[in-house]
Image (tube, rainbow, N blue to C red; front, side):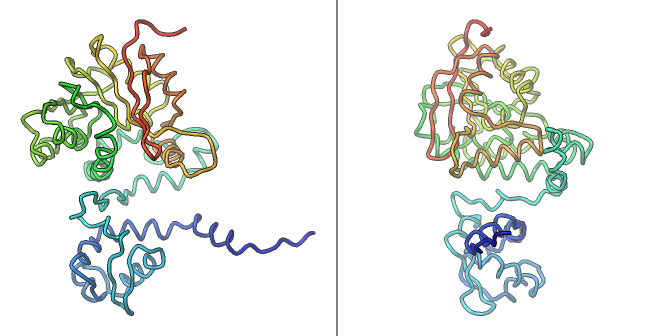
Length: 342
């Protein structure tokens, strides 16, 4: 047998990719608010232990793990400080990601059965928990709240991405379908004082919407409506937004959501869909990572622009343009069409 040459670089790279230690450590550090405590300056691990309530020895191990990945820095033995990466985990940062990486036990248990998804083509979450992902969240308020917090963190970035890429001021009334706690719509309304909005989602999801809207100073310009986007969606909107909704559903359910919008959208209204578009090629594409996550947890599908166009046609919409950002996220604008394609 021919002896293979040892490629240390490839070995290290593969080891890093197979690691699940750092992702867990990062999420726990965020939950302990370590970055917030370090925001005033470097601290010893004993000081951090007192501030966080964590065991000093265990916390030191955690932080050294993250130091070797550039998240924190160890100025001298047992004394730690922020890096620019860790600054994103501070609450005061305008683009804070402190809540973006929660440890949700139900998701982790589903991922332990990922081989089931690979063998059957079905989501692993229902196998583990006996119900669909979103049904589970409806019945587990704390897990649902943490998902909403993670979405709110990402919304700060997404609002900035698309704020100047689309003429939001041309929309008198925007209905955000599947809006969660309303953080994305609140961000838009704060930047466009001529707009009004409707936050629409299930009752257990919109519970914090009023607080979010009030904090943004836009409560008086936004209604809150509850219901299922498979059934009755609020009428009278000039435009309807589906932001990172369709990737959580297979084609059958995605078309059902789109058709529910189609029944209420005015003839000259527009449908706006924000999703990560899949592209070919070998480069890094966060959409491909999100695709696998959606599949394992919810049986969802991330799609190419052509696949979205097919969904629109099946739902009596016509894709008019695609507005891309510098990463995988894109905004698709569609208009009602007269009939389905054959």
